[in-house]
Amino acid sequence: MAATLAEKILARASGRDRVEPGEIVWVTPDLVTTPEVSFPAYVNRLRQNGIDRFALPERVVVAIDHEVPVHSKEGAERNRRTRQLARETGVGHLFDGDGITHPLVVERGHVRPLDFVAAADTHTPSLGGVGALGVPFSIELTMILAIGRIWVKVPETVRVEIRGKCPPGVTARDLVLATMARVDADLANYRVIEFGGEAVAALSIPERMTLCGLCIDMGAKSAVTEVDERCVAFLAERGVTGVEPVRADPGCRYAAVVTLDASTLSPQVSIPPSPTHVRPVAELADTRIQHAYIGSCASGSLAELTAAADLLDGRTVHPEVQMLVIPATRRIYQQAMENGVLARLSAAGAMVSPPTCGPCFGGLAQLAAGEARISTSTRNDPGRMGSRDAQIYLGSALTVAASAIAGRIADPRDYLPAHTPAHMEDAAR
Amino acid sequence: MTEVFSGRCWRFGDDLASDQLIPPHHVFEYDPAVLRRHLLAEVRPQLSCEAKAGDVLVTGRNFANGSHHSHPFLAMKEMGVGLICETISRGPFRLAVFVGVPLLVAGPDVIAGLGDSDALQVNFTTGAIRNQTTGRSFAVEPLAPFLQDIVAVGGGLNYARALLEAEGTDNAKR
Picture 1: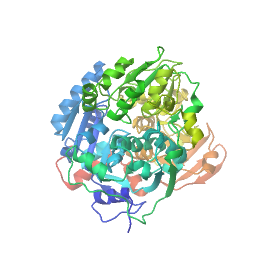
Picture 2: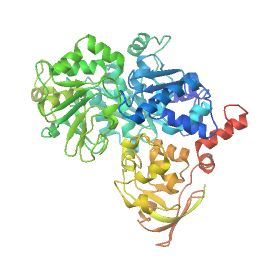
Picture 3: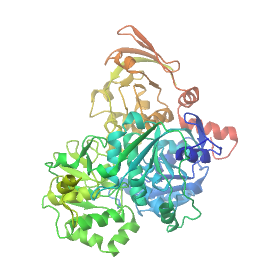
Picture 4: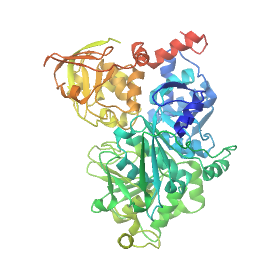
């Protein structure tokens, strides 16, 4: 029987030849990840329940990523406990201020295609960018730590086929926002989004991670992209070898097939109160912003930082805008420092901070009432970044950089290096 | 769990996001006694003061969407309230089961028949709902027995410990 990518992964993780959508199977995760926000609390919960050892500690990765550098007494104590408990429980790896969990485990070669990854943190579906199925389990991670397995209802798959080529200024963020405009919570709920098509094949691996990571915010269980030669080469550079390309079997069953044409898309922005409220950037042209942020697990790659620096070349951040840039991992930070990207961003007026989830969940750089930020982070619920009366808009690194220059939400196509004005491109189409 | 709940209906609308249930800056807080004070505090401040064990939160579509945080469900368990929603995505559904919050998913006609402040009697094992204020009764499909078992033993950790004890490993100690 033909299987979707998610069905192949769940069959493998449950030790079966195949699985059918709707059945409940017990799966053994290949990798279990948790940030410091939850790890000590989870270990405490387990110990309170008389469970003091992990079933498969070598598969567990703990990352101190949410409050870095630590800026509270509570955080300091939490980090101390995290380091101590990581030693006591014998976890496979502790990352301590090295970056945000999801990009980090890919960068450091902890994830293979067809892996089933159980995470405490919500945005683990970004691992679909390397053909793994990352599923957030939140506090259910305690059960996984205890018994090394978890029940999963095999999801149906929605195939999203993105044809054509992204025009200049249109990025992976815009592709996933355009997908959100077509795949609502009712279609996505309890299903996996499987991306394919020419526009997806043209994306880099970090861009595919952006595409998959944000699918959780449309209500999907997870998301995954096909494993092609580009993915194989990317992983080989990170020490993951013996990987073969893999895709869904021809004739497999999808709950729905949604087709988009990338060549017709423009930059998109999520407006308050949720990421799924998507508008073309042009409709928001008069929206003033006081803050601009590039970072989070959904962004902050070297390519995005470079693209933002290129767009800012010869320009400066608007005097009434605070622009903050946070590379997603220490390695990206190091590379961007060495190749001059951070210096160019700083020279244009941006602040640069070390890798952390920080602003994405309101742990750093909070907003005051009446302020607005455009951000590459994951969510824009009221109050997520400080005041409930602040407005959060979400867009690509290019849209954020253009808006930082303009002091209002701006179309990045009007700022691209050696650009063709957007209205001329539209006219030519 | 106590399969039959008798109490007040707390009625909410569609698209109640996880971050509205408990604002995300409480993400580092795991004490249920503290969390219950923050449950829906900015949406319906009187809930945390007035809700009693046996009350039932009744919501529309897409309940607890967004961040998959256990915090709202820890708060609900602490309050002793049950949950009926029209739709709930997979993350919060699992959390409700894991934490041990009794849950029913009901159609729009049922939800429309449950008004704020109505007196309800809800059997979470059989799916029988009686609105004592209006006199109307409804029957919905209950959770799968396998999931009811997890809720019944008080959540996933109790379930895990029972499994470990049954397997005779020394990972669980009393």
